[in-house]
Image 1 (tube, rainbow, N blue to C red):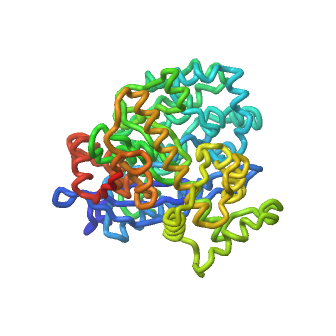
Image 2: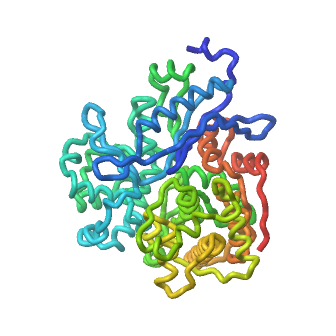
Image 3: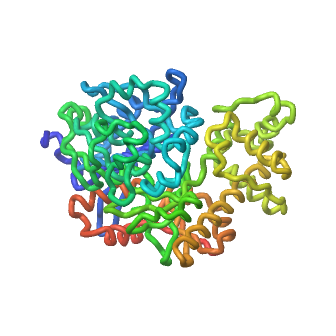
Length: 504
């Protein structure tokens, strides 16, 4: 099919970056020593209700990814390779004929409720952490599999293979099955020291080892896309594994100013931590609930999962009437009515409106109520606004009565959580940190950047925004020999993209 690619730019690479709410296809190439990006496609990711559970629409993701690769050609590109990254922990099961077994249940679904108790009766959480080093979160894959055992044991019996979401999308493109290391490290089934499946854990929890291929590392080439995919997109290309967990890709793109630096990948989740060469699975790390997730080239992302911008995104959706539930308590207290009015706007509420409201509340000297942003109550509430108000009321603090007070509460709570995480990192590492380096969409939030710098007492370096896509592209470029090593890629990223410094 090479003749069909005549006139198209071939010295480029495509990053397919899919998050919990949206995905995009970004083309990257090097020009005059600088990395250039062009977004060619953006699409919504949605959850659908199937068989009593919130599930990912993997058919939609597959079609949008192929559409995005086809749009590369319309934009004048025929990428040499494609890499896919997504969120972690979620998976699909395939039978012997490679048909889906069951649904791709989403991590915010409630099926894992009560699984801590089930798991702890099988293996002490301290022992599980010592072996796998994974932060205790209700949606970890190990708890999802325990829930599946109880609800649909026949699905595990019928399954022939386990693939995580990006692995499954890669399979649809190439016909090759591989489980990439960085995403596999979010399952709670991978041994932190060896980087291989922990068969002791699998046996104890009754999870069939036969379903799991040995892990493959970022930089590996899965081969060319299927002929029917090549025809659909209009050119031949191959699939290269990036760090398929989006945080693993984002960390690769951190320029790391003012070392030693704390990294913060800021999006729906805030992933705050550092890059290590070995895992830290000590009891102190377990007590602080830090995680050891796999990074590129045998690195470890020692970090804390923080609820992040999810709370802000949820408030915005709620104010715009996309999804919210008004219960009797909310009606009686008039809270949702108050926020839904958003006086003086007269248009759909944007993130700039929320930031402005927080700025005004802070300037007016309003004392912010503080909530624990990592409380599971904020993971998937019917109404984020009501849940925040209820948390303030239950803790004896003033309940936010205006949009500004609500946003001031969320921002201050996030900044304080960041400070606690940085302090925890310092204690575990035995030294202080000189800066916080923020990448991802959240680095555009000037209010949060400023308050993070002020509350943590450290300079904040914000940027690049396209951290995850850049990290995805970086691995593809390394695999193709464009750069000799990771240090050279990071130097090019620092030179190519604007990074804003915010002093405390």
